[in-house]
Image (tube, rainbow, N blue to C red; front, top):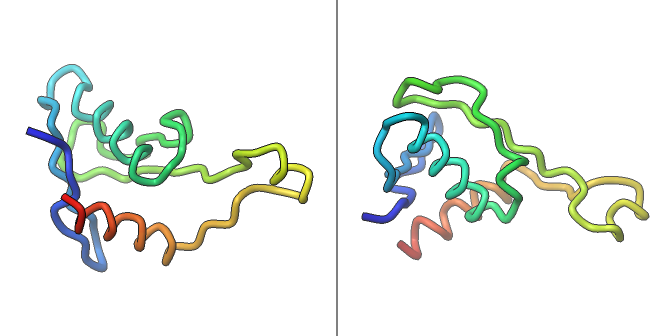
Length: 94
């Protein structure tokens, strides 16, 4: 079994997680998987709501990732549309 995005709608993103929901393993896998899909380090993603629930809210920090970006006055600009596009691409490739 492999983690994958199974649905995307206006209210939520459905993600099937390969890890069991024990001792935080599924939460860790969700963060690792989403960091891979979105191209950020796992430390840039945190679980805001839902540590013991099937429904979760993630906070994602798309801050500065390169020295060049820092020299140009800030972080990487990522729009909601760009994030949605990355999620859909991953779902379509699964």
